Image (cartoon, rainbow, N blue to C red):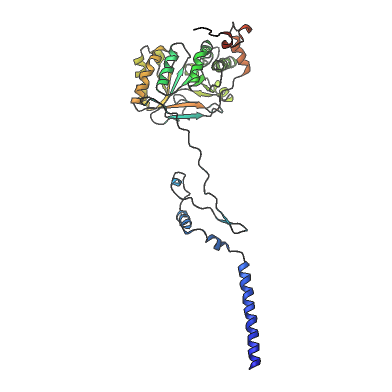
Length: 361
């Protein structure tokens, strides 16, 4: 009996030792993936399950919703990394500058145009890019700058806290660079409208593409030089005559071509009220549009305050067009523009402020 008890005790001891070894081995085993995944909080699992049978969240939906989880990965140290299910949204557009005049028309949007390849705008001729929303208007002016008229247009725009695009004739810009500079300083977009407003669809330009290019490029250079800083690679053909041979050339120069949606024909009108009536009647029919006017015309300058007032009263909103990159001029045509100034001499190389100074007033 005594021997039996000793044997039984020995066997019991060996069994306990064996059990302890097994427990220790289990404690050192890696945590199974299913066990690690189970450590995600119950609320997170609920969101993932709720979205599992739906399409991925759109950014608008995600504003007030929890982000669904991507598949969980387990590192060697059993920590979990969670990746977002979609990329961060693009930055929101910058807000339009505030206007201190509560009754002003103001600006609704500012749009940036990438002119790479010379895209063309204005549904009168080009249908691909119709970027304006209902009751939106882009104001554009041709043939300036011109004394008296351009300042009237500029004042009306500033008083209404709004902006426009000006397609300037190069020769006019060289005559009055001060006006071109004033427009640029006020934040207006300035493009070009040839050197001397020649119809490039007629002779001699229609058969001489090099002469036509010169008319375009001298205009680009002259406007740039008059402003004395960046101008837009925006171009409008005189009389909206767009020769097919010249459009690919503007594409190589990354200069956008602008026709129009609505031509006011203000150059045929002599009274400001007729300019307003033309613009508002055509806008009412079209609902929106790139509006073509001329700051060369005196009646247009006089019409602007009333036109802007009626645009606001009619619920129209102004869109301002700006380029992604400024225009680049070509040295060859820069020199041609300089050569037009027959009285430009080395004696006048100094700046005006260094030559003329007020000493008594």
